[in-house]
View: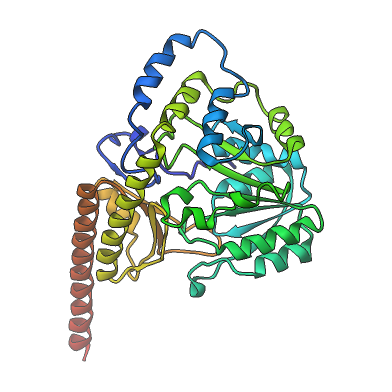
Length: 374
């Protein structure tokens, strides 16, 4: 049965408009200057069909990513492309990490692909290791999805591991999809991106999106980069035409105009806020994993459900208690503007203090009952 699990929809709930929504990982700086004006101007052309191949937008993306325009396919968010890929590649078997972005698994199941898992261990801080290549070779999978940095953990996979996996996959013509939707939040984006290998490997697909880094989830705009012309053609074939609206193409083009400055400001801001929130949560005894993205993945030492308690204070985060391989106590929270991050921390401090008082009171009552019985 289908169940929406992405977060970001609390404002559609009854009385949800005044929630602080930290359940979706959107750039806290908001969308770039010029986007709103571009969308307003483009609204006059909504009586016309969009450019079905997003020619102007692809030119701008190519300049931004330093790749060839013909290597780029634009879609209705990266998830649109994720769901097209199984129908393009027709994989019998696929490999994904666990935990990771849920759409990989759902897209593969929608096609009927058998899924193998590379389980990421808490004891190793959920880092991906060379064993992923071992599984891929043993099972001879046709398709691999790898999120870097991973979602929900925010952990980066070492470039050497991905390179080795890519070279290994080429031996039996498996395709590796590297989802880099959060990579521009990292300080070392140029050192960990797989873009330098695009020209060498036609079995490499890189996914990017305007959703997170440019704070445009409502616009729905993502893209794939690949040097395989046949695969690009299949992406157009296996899906609706006009997947990218006039408004989305205008917004994406505008967002890229001053992207370099915007991204530098984003990386600096996110780093500062990540350090602040991480330090404060660790002071409260939460285990905070070493995320390099605009969100934090944490494990609670307490018995109470942090998501439920924060909901009472009109703050929404993501719980991962129903995710295979994790269990109760794991949460993901997005970084926001500093005043909202302060609100989050002060609220968690209040909740922990109140819960400790309840625990101490219950303990005292148990001790009192024991003494009475004696």
